[in-house]
Length: 565
Ligand SMILES: *Cc1c(COP(=O)(O)O)cnc(C)c1O
Image (cartoon, rainbow, N blue to C red; front, top):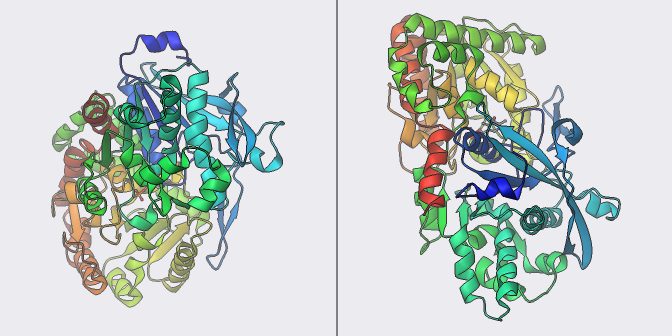
């Protein structure tokens, strides 16, 4: 389907989905982490389920960044350009918006996400790289999360305000505008302006209600510091001091513009991305009705070839109907193990191309890969290297790591240095590697190829987490702190294992002891000595968790609870 109003008229509900990042494909670097993966997986599920939607994001033709890590663990960042002409078609559309009192021109590209049955979700990528723009403006849509907060505000203005203008230029008439995180919240201000022009009066009250009825807002961050905020000096500089500044202060915060607050005030339906995250958000924003729709992953995208073959054979309808994965309990144990051995072999072969030491096929392998940032506590496993060495002397283990730190996240970069240092210190005892350039492809290889997926976030900061759901799709048991989705997916000794309790208290020493104790006394012995019990846990992970924590279930909840309301 092209973006074309006639076809749209046939669809009763039309969703315009706005997200600063969308992971379209591994090699198109328009994503930095979980938010972008979630957006891409959501749209892939919309396509499978024939949920009519068009998505909006920025072109980011210079990508997020290419990560290189030197011998000492120092991360350097370089542009990661991709060629839109190879994947997208250029749309014959041009709009302009006002930034800094000057005109910024925007054009757009279209990338199609098409399901196996042929239903397409168009993704519109906004592009400011036009000859009539000045040099600064040309680069405003070039780099995901690049530059400073001024650059960020310009990007959010282009996504929200520019996105609505492009949508109208394409004659789309959505009934719902979904803001995936606060970055897109300015779209609601643009809608307000449009409605006010139509009515031509000077109060906003009716328009506010009208806009709210059409907007849905999803928050992804459970910590106040994680919410996007801008000073009003900056807002005035970039967006001007026009008549809406007062309204912005009323809806987005008096002292600074808080994009989450703006989204909350302009949406009829607001949700967090796991039940716990809903709770935490309600505490953070008292007086707002905040729901929860727990994240998922797109089943087909995140299932390795060997498990796809297994599912095709025994659960033939799983791709279109991932709920059927609950029947995984009846899969033959030897077939499940064979599929895992194959996925693990693919990972180990890949790792051995880069590693000086040789990783082994039949050694117990722990995986940890995610954005490198403080709350993810990436170094917890290595806090007591002697203990880890001792565990590995008894029963051998190896560890595979990966992840990017945002260029301005110096603590995150320190973690990478520390992990690379620890890797060296463990040489001869525990094979350990940090793989650079974390991407969708690498995430899929690691989450499907290791024996155990580890997650150790600081509670309650993991809004949901999705990599553990990818592991579950591949029969890889989770071993995780009880936060985010794991509070819903964990059944001790059945789908995996917990670290710590359900409270928000983080006791590092206690958690660390439990981490090592369970590894040494429960998990590793079961892996080496009781394969049947181990394989049952693998199957439980598929049946209880993959069957539920997928974007088919999630998209249906959005459709029913948020869009049709
Ligand atoms: C799945 C994924 C993430 C998100 O993982 P979390 O466990 O939610 O932190 C981040 N980056 C990439 C490349 C991914 O594939």
